[in-house]
Image (cartoon, rainbow, N blue to C red):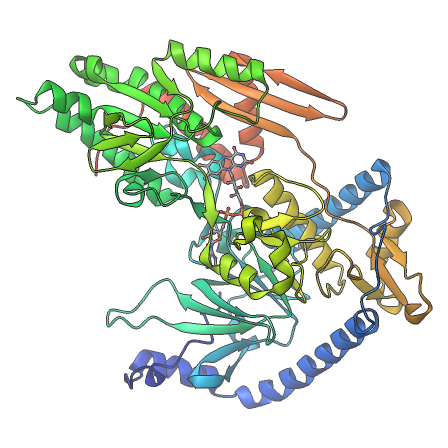
Length: 592
Ligand SMILES: Cc1cc2nc3c(=O)[nH]c(=O)nc-3n(C[C@H](O)[C@H](O)[C@H](O)COP(=O)(O)OP(=O)(O)OC[C@H]3O[C@@H](n4cnc5c(N)ncnc54)[C@H](O)[C@@H]3O)c2cc1C
């Protein structure tokens, strides 16, 4: 895999000397690049011209009102579309499987020096930059056509994480690595950069990135990637709502390090309480586990924790059990609002049986190192507090949303929070940028911030890009993505024949253009929540009806769905073994 290119030269940072290794790499990269540079410049120019030509015709016109677009299609057409796309995906996976890995790929790429000594990635193919490695980004990178596009993935996390099962890792039912897939494994043909994007120049079409890691002398590489298409899939971060002490004293449930820290802390609290001479009040405090947030994540963690206490810790620390308490604090009148009333009641009954104290309408107003202060003024001594009370926008998304005037009308309360996107997931008010998953707000319809939505959006955009449609400007009245009739491929024609994914322009100015007649459509397959004691809520959505299952049967479906939804065969096997291990030997109590 290519090394990150486009690093800021050390000499340009506070006059620091270029280290020998970096200088050598620099030299190697630049040596012999003249010939490649000429070729790449010519190809890139041509690609640019073509893209301009392609884009120019429809988008150079003043924006027409595209009312009634995209045109309605039948469910049969939608189904055919998905069948064809699945066939394309299988073909591209098979093709990828038999190809050699791109070990010398760096030679295909060039470095050009940009402003301020910062070097930039340059390719002879159109560049697609994907920001993030979560649900949406992973689903794009699995199927995007890396032959036709230079695909650069920028994320501070070098792996995909199967978030729905994260709570299970915090108590050791599932091992951390069983839920991950490294980006370089998900698709070895993309260029991955372990870095964060800090800034985006929407006019110049460049993303500015800073490496996650630094050298021993503190030097942190920075680089730029000019893009032809930008995919923003950076998700959200845990919301603290500005409540004092949350950031400092609570554990979040978002990433693997959160879960690692929490697993250690639970174990430490038991060892602390087990020390000789510990006072009863200290024991009660240390062993009070508080979960804040009554959504599926908070509920699942409370259920999983209660399994750990009952099935494993009880056997090893029987004398401590009278002091153990689990509380679930929820600021709203009900937990699990995604489910119907009957299922919510089932969850409450289950928690009552498991001795989990659920308190609705109980907002937390402050957290100190040993007390949780409630809205009513009550103070709860606690040992571990898990904060799972919602999400907030990432700084990059706020920055972008504030930078685009057309976004203002879609921001709740006028505060920039998500990137509003049109029917084709294009960011409203800019050219060639799509936003997906939790970072986006789908204007045509209110969608939940879930993995299901993010994954489907990723797959949708990958196919749109693969088919070579020019995205153009985002906006509810902007022309849809378009393509020249002369550039239509066999794939396009098959989609057209079976699924009517294209429609000609109805104005005389752009006769040789076809528009993408397929909006993003979300298929809701249902919701699941684990409640502890091998019981789960399962609500499966089918056309015109939904199936609701609770208890052990619900748990069976829950487990089957999560095993099927794993992103690789490896992960499926690892999880099955983890479940078996926990069942036969119990969960591991080692603290390291
Ligand atoms: C514990 C837990 C359980 C959940 N359970 C469910 C469930 O059961 N069902 C369900 O449908 N949904 C569930 N969700 C929600 C689901 O995980 C999210 O909706 C989904 O992850 C959103 O996907 P995304 O791609 O938008 O963002 P994410 O998956 O959050 O990915 C964001 C990516 O962007 C990267 N990033 C962040 N900042 C930058 C930057 N500046 N530059 C570049 N990259 C950046 C991050 O490192 C990450 O890789 C759960 C979430 C959690 C935390």
